[in-house]
Length: 317
Ligand code: ADP
Ligand code: MG
Image (tube, rainbow, N blue to C red):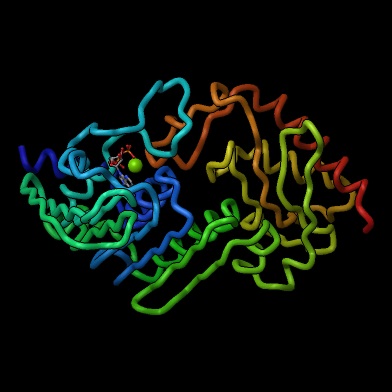
């Protein structure tokens, strides 16, 4: 049964990147304004995410790593928080050694929970308000999972790209990524252009323009047509504030909005939030929740194209 559990956990958390994503989502769900990520040896040795969010009340801490324990689920049809399955911490405790140190600001002391498999211990410690979660020795007891891992360098690239997306979509927060003791990415609260500067440098930031069509579905920044790339790896979307891998229809809609301003086979830099009614989003499609299914993508795509076109035509180019 322990092996079965570990395999099931390996489905929820199949690589260090999954750990980082789940912990980032938990930090955001907790309303953090400062999030610190640390990755050691591609995350297999250790992933730590520290936040200054709401913390977990002392009495609820032992529940956190139980399977399907979530404080968030109201209705699967109307998901507003990022996490909702209550499986992430559980899976991390099965796949590695989980440590959660947490304190709500109004609580006197902090509580530390250490969980590995079904062994759980809880102690009182002193710590700043917020939550720090570490996962060490990921897959150390799951040789099959360990074998399928790519290189540490590749994982670090993915983690950096993931954190970049969070910075771009949540520029109002403090963010920091440390890899093997070295700061890789750092951002202090700013607007969207400041986030572009943190991720792609000041030159790119100078070439993006804010866009917001009154009453529209889009808001964010778009590059002036002269700043184009041949790949679409700098097109970033969030849906209702949640960073997602956009359906290709939305990427194409933005490209179409540039029309002839865009040389063929080139793509803009953009960071766009798409606002849709929560019931039109199904985040359950992909286990990693990175891909969303949107109702009426064709209708939405047409609006996106028109809003991009309108924003660009109003611009002094
Ligand atoms: P989910 O996010 O789906 O609810 P998780 O396994 O990720 O499930 O977390 C379990 C529970 O632990 C959450 O519902 C939340 O109550 C608590 N929790 C986890 N991480 C944090 C955090 N960083 N800050 C505050 N509470 C947290
Ligand atoms: Mg979660």
